[in-house]
Amino acid sequence: QVRLVESGGGLVQPGGSLRLSCEVNGSFFAINDMAWYRQAPGKERELVALTSRGGRRTYGGPVRGRFQVTRDYAKNTVDLQMDNLKVEDTAVYYCKANVDYQVGYLDVWGQGTQVTVSS
Image (tube, rainbow, N blue to C red; front, side, top):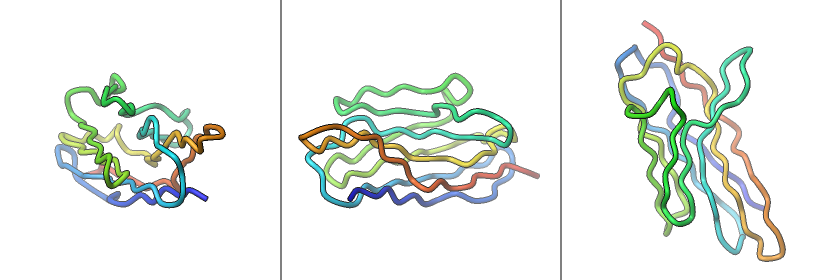
C-alpha cells in the first residue's frame, strides 16, 4: 500500500517563505505525475504545481513566479518552495501522486499540511 507523507507546513508572515516536502512510501512499479494542490476554507481544491514523469512542470496562475516545484526521482519525493507568500495562500496543502502498479493506475493523496500566512 502506498502512502504519501507530507511535512513543512506552518505559520509565516506575508512575504515569507516555506518549503513543503512529500515522500512516497510503499510498493509500486513507478510514479507518474506528482502534484501539490491546496484547499482554502469554503473553496474548491485547486492545483498549485505539477511535475510530470518526464519533468514537465505546470503551475497554477496565482502562484506562478513565486512557487517552485522540484522532484527527486530516485527518492520519490516532491518539494514545493513557496516564496513571497501572501495571505491568500493560506490553505491546507495536499500532495498527490499518480501511482503505476503495473496492473493499473491510482491517484494517492497525502493527509494535508496546513499553511497559514498571517501577520
